[in-house]
Length: 625
Image 1 (cartoon, helix red, strand yellow):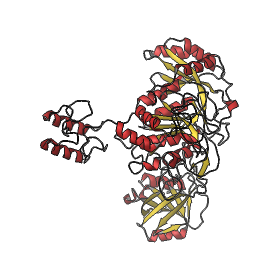
Image 2 (image 1 turned 135 degrees about the vertical axis):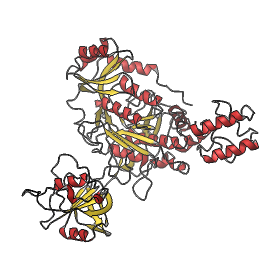
Image 3 (image 1 turned 60 degrees about the horizontal axis):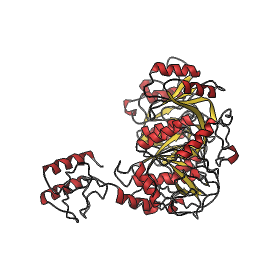
Image 4 (image 1 turned 45 degrees about the vertical axis):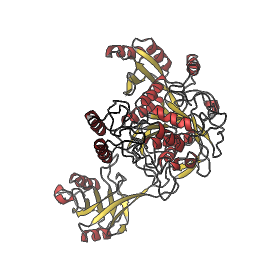
């Protein structure tokens, strides 16, 4: 049995702290987020020394430090600006200081009153790699055995990585996304984040692959640049954002850098907020702790191959918790095709061009003719909520200039149209543009004059503007502890979804996975495999026995309260019947006896009174547990 959290030994921390105090930080790169080659994820052991972002420092102030105390500390350190504040960890901020003065700034903060600690902004990198093989991991962790009971529905997994391919047909649209990389959107320009996301929750459909928890919801936080690396400050921002967006699980297939108290605080705060945090143990074939995997409250994942043999690159040591498939894992990667567009009506796709500046957004609705669209009066009130059909050409009222595409589209948008189809006037389709920087609010496309004539003859018909991704690849097999980590994150989501929200704490979930893992290597826990290979079905069975009963949940026909995990109107009806009939369960307990406050066990006082009725009603409307 695993020991209770926190498990990290003081000896491990003292080694790390000594290394930091010895001043062994490697010289920081000029731009740590810009130089790593795409897909260069397997760490070079010779390059394992921590590096830091120049001119950036993490500082945590004491709770009683007032504004004047903070300002004095910033001034003493020569701070340029505070560029991030983390609500998840009270008093924690990220600060810019002059490049080349990071060490001096940290020393100044350390001497200032009201400062708990100051430290470098370490760089982390994606922990994965590329190889070719057939998929096997989903079956190996026994996820399909749990699918008849649950598939992850209603649970959110935050993948903090290089982003995701928003157009991948085998992945759901994220319920929320954010980029913490300056100048880059959350669209994945690397492969790594999309690959990890697919292992967690690729949909169960007729093509591609399926993830561990195929009905879970996806949160995407881009904390690593397309180059594959990112700063601690951005990753903490991602953790903070994930918790704020109600993540149930945080999956981080990244590591490197040195020990960061700020990052450790953020992970522990997420754990204490009820979020399961999972991270890759590292790919250096080393016992040196990798972060964030080695922080308290984080499940550290090692990698094995399809034969349950230890992956040669996988880190080991006392902080490794569990193992999962990480060699030759098949999953999703960004599609190499670009979105294509067509306009359609009367069951016919038309030759269509997308105007430069138009968003890749699909819409459907009645198509309403709006003339040349040069003035507001060209747009009838009925176009609101529909697609505007506008002819190319026309002149500006009172002038000789042509009406621009931008003017036509803007007038349509102002009239409430959800999309615009501009039909040609005989000059031919070409490189039409809205002449804007950025993206227009609604999709704008062009069709031929002949199609425009047909559309005019069918004014008011239902039409559509459709964007389709032509998939030319979309799948690949990679290796790394990065690939092992989303297996465990997916299992966590799968298990959480089987029980009422809040019924399974992060500590209980980790206990379930570790206590039931398929033992590998030496008996019990060992430094190579942790507790062994994660086993979704065995962990599910463990939780069925160990999750506390909810007294409001009595719908199980066996008469054993609290075992189906769902509170519905059927429970209320059965309670009323049980209360007035004084029905008893198989252990001769009164099913409607729920008066023992906080015991979580119906029928322990042996009396059936109005107090039981009142308390049941309260619990029913409050939910479980």
